[in-house]
Each structure stands twice: as structure tokens, then as C-alpha cells.
Length: 282
Image (cartoon, rainbow, N blue to C red; front, side, top):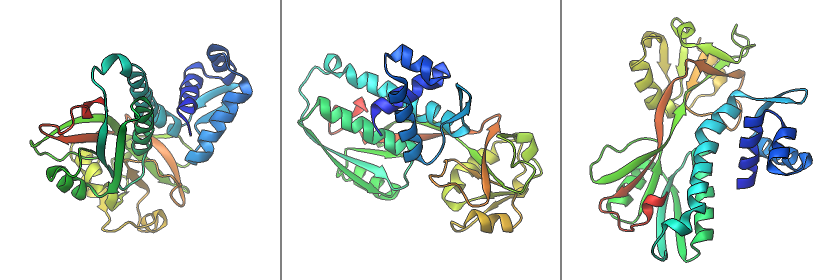
């Protein structure tokens, strides 16, 4: 996927049709259609629901637009203004730590790095993918200059910023009453058996503890990454997850929550004082 694909996607989402987007962008219908198809193929999810010539975003498409594409295009606009904003020549090696779990945030960061390097060819990037605990230790030892994580470190030795927030999604059992819908209200979850996978338990638990709409007694936190089929077999009707999976969970359908549940994610950290004064440009 290319930055141009995301530009086309954002324009189609705003216009509601490929034809209108093509007219505003002075591009061909076929070119934009091919770009959208490429994105959907690489992401493994449909971005639009099609009704004749009218396109509306799927729940996944809405998530991508709000939490990846808009921030990414903002970064891209800032990078394009880079020549005006950077007063000194950029060179050297920037050591960056990414988290192990793939996500839209991770993909967006890699695109930003690629474009940054195009503007500053003498800046070299050493990118390592590892657990948050390893990133934490290497920031302290200054083996890393910058680290991206999905959760806060709560350490005043680091300067940090939030790159985006995330939305919690709901996977409903495909033979449940919710399977034919695109969303579910929080009130409907009040008495519903809920399963939460271990890898997302910390993020979800904080939200549930602060929500009056969900009964904590109905929530089961699994001690291992079990399949959706196993969780549904245990009696859970829905699974809450902060990430849209790259592959659909078995025997489930994806729903959005109404009103949405959100939590802060996508943090970047640098040790204070920053060993490289241009880290903030991310």
C-alpha cells in the first residue's frame, strides 16, 4: 500500500463515491477503484459497503479513517512542510523500537518513517521490533532514541505524547441475536456474558471498571489466547477487543459499540533530555 492509496481512500470516504472523488482529485475512476481494491485486499477487510454508485464506510473502514488515515495524512502534511520547519541539516542514526503486535498504528509509523527518510536521506533508521519491556529497558540505557508503544510507561524519566486513541470493538457469536446487526449498544451488554482475550485484558479492564453500562461479574478474562470458538463454547456471547483482527475471529461477526468505548493508545517515548533533538517531529 502507498500513501496515495490512503489519500484516495480518504477522499472517497468524504465524497461517498469514486466518481466524485476522481473528479475532485483529477484522476480516473479506474485508478481510484484499483487503489481502493488494493487496500481492501492487503488489509483483508472491506472498507466500503456498496449500494449502486454510493459508498458508505464499513465499521472497519470508519476505524481506519478515524484512527489511522486522518492522523497519517496529518503527519504526511507536516512532513511535506518539513523543509520549511527544519532549520538545521538532519543526519545521523535514529534507533526506534516498535511493538511486536501488528496494528494500523504500526503500519502508519512505517509509512511516516519512509517519507521522513525521503526528505532527510542522511538520517538512517535502525528499527527493532520487540516487547514493551525491552523497549523500556533500551530507552533507559539509551540504546533506543524513540519507542512507540500501545500503553503508557508512567515514568517521569521519559517525555511522551499520544499519537492516537483507539476504539474497542465487539465480536458477536455468529448464531446470536446480534449477528445480523452492525452495532450493539452498551446497555445491551449489561447482562451479556463477555469474553476478553488475555492480550487485550488490561486495556479492556480499565474501561469496564469505569463503565456503568457493563456488569463486571459477567466478564471472563482468559489466561491464554484461546480461539473465539473456545470462548463462545464457554458461554460468552460477545468478545471485546481493542483491535480489529487481521483475520476474522472464528464463528463471529464484527460489531461497533454505541456509544463507542475508547481508550488512549499509540504512545511514543523519548528519554529526557532527548539524545536527538529531532525526535519530536514524529
